[in-house]
Image (cartoon, rainbow, N blue to C red; front, side, top):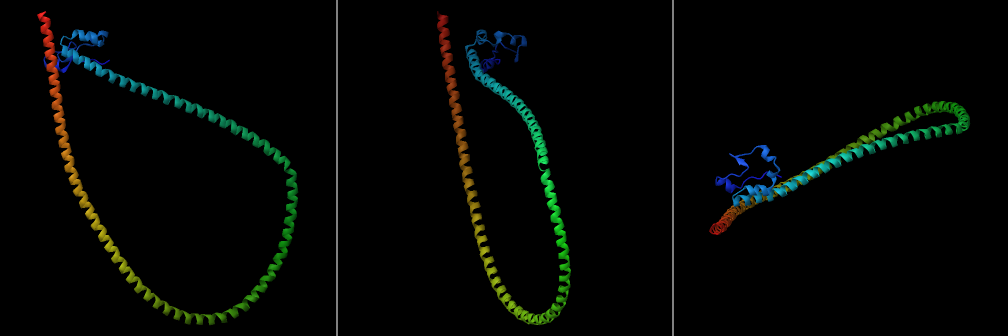
Length: 286
């Protein structure tokens, strides 16, 4: 439990509590005393009833704070313990997973080695038969290739002779084709030039119209943006004035509430003083 101080009312009147000496606390030997934390013993040492009431209020306010602080420390300790447990679980599970992985890899290797040995022994005869068939096919393929090479040589000689004959015919045809192509290309170029000039004029007119429309749209957008900025600035200025008024009103309301609270506290103190005086007078009269 925290150490309780004397009430501000008693310190203002010049009467300090029993746990203060010249504005400082007493020595740790007094603080270590169990009676120092007992409210009843402390209330018995305080003579002023107002100071005694202040000590009771401070003691009642300190208990929820201590409760929340201890709850927070307990939660932090529980979280740390949980994190430690989770870390240990993670390491244990990782070790178990690595051990299971090693066992599974070793088992897979043993199974693979056994299967490969059986497969090699079982496929030895098939390999011999396949090798014999491959040799037969390769020898037949080589004999066929020799025949094809002879045919290829004969075909090459025939193709060379026919190529020379075809070249002579193609030269005559090519000269005629070139003459016809040159005449037709001249006609086509003149037609394409006319079409390009017409297309260029049409493109220029459409481009100028597009640029004019785009410029008009940009001008309209700029005008709208300027209007929106001006309206936003006006609205912000009005909102600033409204906020300033709200802040002023809130300040005035806080001041009024503070004054009412002070007046109520003063009335309560006066009423308490009156009751104490009446009780003291009745006690002294008796």
